[in-house]
Length: 198
Image 1 (tube, helix red, strand yellow):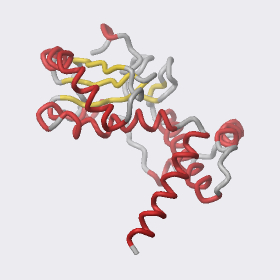
Image 2: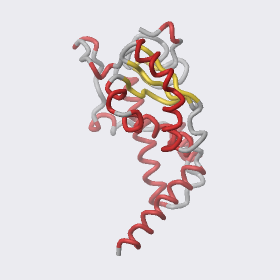
Image 3: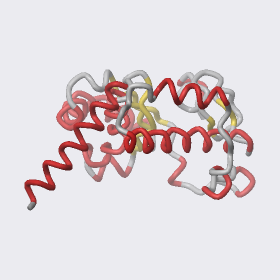
């Protein structure tokens, strides 16, 4: 019985890989796995003093607790890249950038500085625009499996609704990448030049 179940899971996995490749998402999904795998790859000591923030254009951005940690990790970058390549495959990431800017999950912001977080009961009611629907149709054009198509459509629509909710509730929109972020700068933390980061 177990081999049949494994074959079925393998088939679903292959179908997802194929659909993501057709949509041009496979590379981006592999890159985003770097963010979630970061603590496992670097181990508990480094993970306690760093946070993998995001991947943009093949570059993994990692916030460090201090400039000392950023410098230390520059010396370990080659070994870290090799470990990430073992998990993700070669060529998924082009580089890692260490940024000595701390990370927000270590300290609670002042109550006045907090922006509301989206609640499903609120953002799920946001209607998609005709442009959103057209973009979704184009993105899912090559997906023939109805179940997979429905799942991908839900994920994509939810991400658009959350983004719209954040923008409507005071989150700034990055002038470069267009994603909502917390802060007063016109650029998000990833898009801001290094010297301009707080």
